[in-house]
Image (cartoon, rainbow, N blue to C red):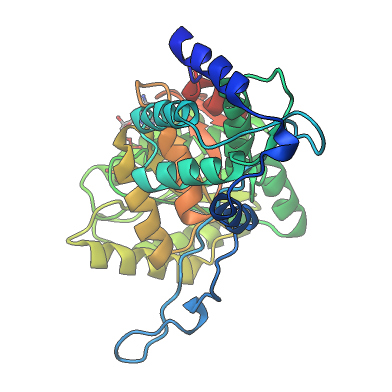
Amino acid sequence: MIEYNREIKDKWEEYDAELNDPFTTPISSKDRKLKDRLKSNTPQKKSKSKNLVTTTGKKLVKLENKSIIIDLSEDELSRRGRIIKQSKLLDEILEELETELLSVDMGHSVVSELIDLLRANLVGTRVPRKAKLGEIVERVVHRSLSHLLESEYWDFDKTVQSLISDESPISIMIVGVNGTGKTTSTAKIAKRLTDQGYSVVLAAADTFRAGAIDQLAGHAEKIGVRCIKSQRGGDSAALARDAIESARAKDDDIVIIDTAGRMQNKTNLMEELRKVRRVSNPHLVLFVADALAGNDAVTQAVEFQKMLEFDGAILCKLDTDARGGAALSIAHATGKPIILAGIGQGYDDLEIFNPQWLLNSILT
Ligand SMILES: Nc1nc2c(ncn2[C@@H]2O[C@H](COP(=O)(O)OP(=O)(O)OP(=O)(O)O)[C@@H](O)[C@H]2O)c(=O)[nH]1
Ligand SMILES: [Mg+2]
């Protein structure tokens, strides 16, 4: 990552030479205050969000926004070494990093939050005397973004296994805007769980789009699982409930509910999805995001989260030239983890999401 050139390296050496004894070079009180405030990641004033209300007195629900935690642990020294100061070199390294992260489709707000936090946490930090600033930043960014992707993470296979050991059938509802990969992911999950020995039923709850029912039924036939369907325009919530009843009657383990991504308008779509969820009461709700949509995927995830909370996301189309930064923005903006990754159009092209793989491909 952060391939700072020879010139920058030289400047770092100059900067090194120009540093006085770190023990007698305290950071300015302004820098220290900023550092302390951001380091603790706690707002200075008590948040008023608890009492957020609309102009007509209705309660507003604040989004759970995951804060980024800067992890300096392995690079920070408690004694000796040198102290990182605000410098042109640091600015250049952070600017380069910012450009790089924006180019892999990480959203503006999360990138600037990360850069600000990095600056605030790095300045004043004592590091080994011989350490290269660019390499320190590289390691800190990697660790910090790992935390972001790994926090709240849950394992898909183990979760399904543990839910089934408590109750059967269990249901998984797949949601997201149109064309992101919901139906394909429904089929891929069915294949994955069938391969693990479970008996799976699909529920064709996208009764809105022409061809959606046949598309899912076609997948079901190829995978060799049952598909519960109705006429086009049928009641999707009733269909989902029927599928669960049918699974219960036939002793199946899992129902996967494929839902619509488009209706007459957004409000209708959300109302329909909320009804499906209320009636079928799924064990898991998974949001499908299209990695190719970049920042739009993040906006969609945030909008969905407001209307219909989900437990985790599936990031599809990672096999394309999508840059993958959306994963970080989605995790940051919704507070929910990416759980599964779609890596192609075949039934086996679904993997457990691997944060390290994504970070290695983003931070090249
Ligand atoms: N390359 C690639 N293509 C994918 C992936 N997942 C889905 N697709 C393709 O994306 C297109 C849309 O997928 P669908 O599963 O139909 O999307 P959907 O969300 O169900 O769409 P609607 O039902 O219209 O809302 C299809 O051509 C899929 O083959 C993936 O991981 N990689
Ligand atoms: Mg579909």
